[in-house]
Length: 103
Image 1 (cartoon, rainbow, N blue to C red):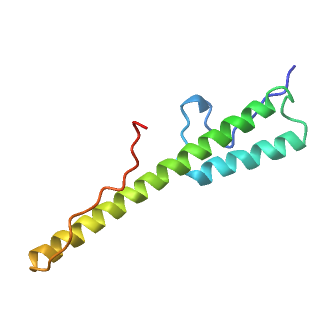
Image 2: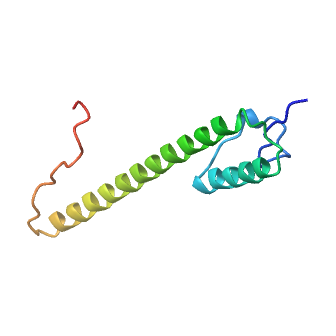
C-alpha cells in the first residue's frame, strides 16, 4: 500500500474543501509534511510536488496579503487627504504609483 500525505486537520475528513486562512496555516502544513517525510510516511514520488504546491500557495498568499495592506494604506491616505482638504489645507493631488500591468 503506497504511503500518502495526511493533512494537519485529521479531523476534517473532506480536506479537499479545506482552506488556508493565512500563512500560518500553510506553515503548519509545511511543518507536518516535513515531519511526515522525515518519518517515511510520505511517498517520495509525491513529496516534491507537495512541497512545490505549498510553496506556491504561500507565495501567492503573501502577495495577496501585501496587496490588501497596500489597499488599506491607500484608503488611509485618501481619508487623511480628504480630512485635510475639509479643513482648508492645500494637499497636492494623489499620484498613482500603481505599476502598469499592460507592460
